Length: 426
Image (cartoon, rainbow, N blue to C red; front, side, top):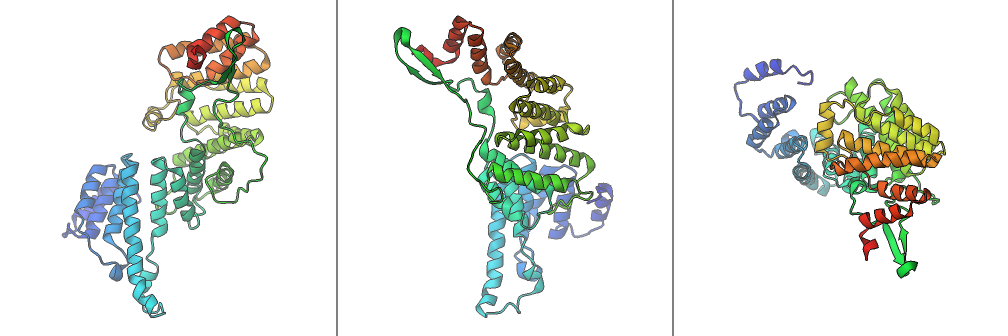
C-alpha cells in the first residue's frame, strides 16, 4: 500500500477468505482511502465490528475506527465532524489507559503490566490529528494547544512547525474578508457643525501590524506572532534536509510536495515578519521564495507582494514598483490551485481581484514616489473593476481621498466621502 501498488494489494486481499475480520476490513478501508474512494472507505469502517481487546493487544478498534473516520471527514472538508470523531477517539483511548493502569497502580508496582500495554499510548498521534482538524475548523487557539503537545515528540517534522505558525497567524487574523468589505466605517468621528463641520478619518483601517517595544519572548509556547516566527525558522531549517521527517505520517514527502511546503513556509515567514514590523527579514523570506522556479503561481504572487511591501517599509519605493511590475497576478494559474482558492475561501480568489490588489499596492508605491497622477489612474482601473463585481481592497477609498486632497481636488474628495461613508451624511 505504501508503494501505491493498489492492484497487487487487491490481489492479495482477495486471497483472504475471512473478509469480515476486523484487520482485513481495516486494510480494505485503507486501500479505498489511498485510492481516493473516501465514501467507500467510510462505509467499510462503519461496518467493522467493535471489540474491546485493549488489554490483550494494546489496540482498541473503536479508537482506530474513530481516528480513521476523522481522517476521512478531514479529506471530505468537514472539519467539524472530523474533530468530533477524533475527540471521541482520544476520550476512549485515555479511558483505556486509565482502566488498565488503575489496578496496577493500586499495588504500587508496574511489574504486572504487559510490555505492549506500557507502550500502547497513541495519544500524541491523536493529538496531532485533533490539532489539524481544529486548525481547519478555524479554531487556532485550540489547535495550537494540541499541536504544541505533538511537537514535543515530532520535533523534526517541518510540516508540523508550519502548522503551528499557521495557528499563530490565524490567531492574529482569522481571515482577510474584512479587507474587501466596503461596509467597514472609514470615519473616526465628526466634530463641529455647519461650515465648521470636520470629518476625522481613521488613521488605520485594520491593526494588522504589531509593532511593539515590549520585550516578548519568542520561546514561550503561545499562539503569538513572535512564537510563530520561531516556528517558521525551525521549519526552514528542517525542510533543507535531504530526508524529511514526516512523522506521525508514514507517507514520505515527495519532491512536488516539498516544493509546495517550501513555498508555504517562506510566505508564512514573510507575512509574520511584516506584521512584526521587520522588513529586512520579510524581504529575505520573499527573495528566497522568488528564487525558486518550482513554486506555484499563488506563492510567487505573494512573494512579489510581500517583497514590495518590505521595500516600501525600507523606504525604497522605486524598487518596490519594479517588484510589483514583475508580478503576473495569477496569469495562467493552474486549475487545481484556482479550485483550492475557491473552496478554501481565500481572498483574493480570482485573477481580476488579484490584479486589483496588485494595482493598489503599485498605486501606494507611486504615491510615495510622488507620481500622484499615475497612482490616480490605477485607482480608476480598480474602481471600474469593482463596478464589474470584482472584490477589491477597501483601502482604495482612503488612498483615493489622500490623492485627491493632495491634488487639490476638494470637491471630488467630498463626493467620495459621501458615497462611501454613511456617517458623513448625518
